[in-house]
Amino acid sequence: MQQQLQLPIYLDNNATTPVDPEVLQAMLPYFTRHFGNAASRNHSFGWIAEEAVNIAREQTASLIGASTDEIIFTSGATEAVNLAIKGAFEMYSSRGKHIITCATEHKAVLDTCKHLEKRGATVTYLPVDESGIINLKILEKSIQKDTLLIAVMFANNETGVIQPIETIGKIAKERGILFFSDATQVVGKIPVNVEKYGIDLLCLSAHKIYGPKGSGALYVRRKDPRVRLIPQTDGGGHEKGMRSGTLNVPGIVALGKACEICKLKMDTEALHINTLRNKLEAGLTTLQHIYINGANTQRLPNVTNISFDQIKGNGLLTEISKTIAVSSGSACTSANPEPSYVLKAMGVSNELAKNSIRFGLGRFTTEEDIAYTIDTVTQIVASLRK
Image 1 (cartoon, rainbow, N blue to C red):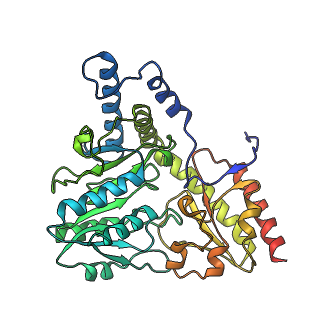
Image 2: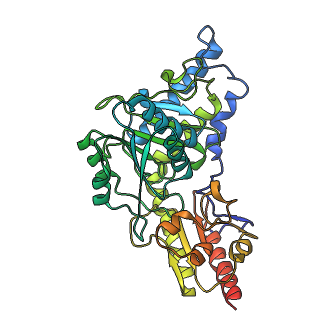
Image 3: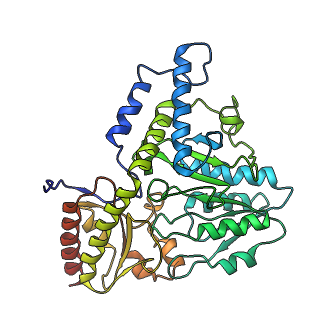
């Protein structure tokens, strides 16, 4: 049965996702009936809130193969990134002050590293090849005696390109270096297991997996090794002293429910979304003179980043966005008129990078959405090339 097409079409799920109705229903009681503070230990309102947080902690931990005492709730991935990198640097700076990261990381990681450079850190920014992958030999050569942290994202937010995380984890483990991975775009889309991949610190965000904005988590390894962090927010000692502040109970409940749904639906959902993504790419490649960035390596199933050649100016995104919500890259840098630094690091020219579109498919994307997108984009590109 065909679904009725509704405009505008939303294909920017890497920027944010709609809240799943099941997630919304799970969180609503914690705004009204169960509004207690999870830190209030003297009455039932607080006990109910605390129990809800504990359940969410179990749900979140289960999705990434962690234990419940390794989950620290935050306001989102950006806060988690700052806590992980700054917290580790401050805790272990007596061992060393060298950090290794990647040129195509999210701005939350890059800007945090630049901040620490002003505080005495030395940072190596690894280059990537034309597929967006780091060179493991360069990584190994970059390790110094005082390297304390390797920070490499699981998969890129603009291209969906997946890094060799398991091998990086082994390299870090062998050298006694902490390994942090930004898995914000990955969790809930493909299987993630912190033990399998040797990850010591990992961040995720509710609004990328059909939960609300303002809720996220940081995984902090508790053994082999036990990772300790200097808190970046001081106060009442919440979240094992790592992140003080009254817990956002509705947001945490929603994150937990979102993780639970992802764990149940992940395999079938990834297969369905990947099929739609492949249809989109096949439909658009009939245009010729287009390039799928990162197509020759492993990518997330829900995203494609396509450069359209032989188009002058930057009117492509404007025209497409009249009926289809897409982006030219990260939502955090959408106000920046410069070409994507991720694509430039991959060797894409300025002109091509300016005419690159990220299509982010999601749980609620339909075949009708994809068919309309193929037809519309084909017409727009043909018109602009004239």
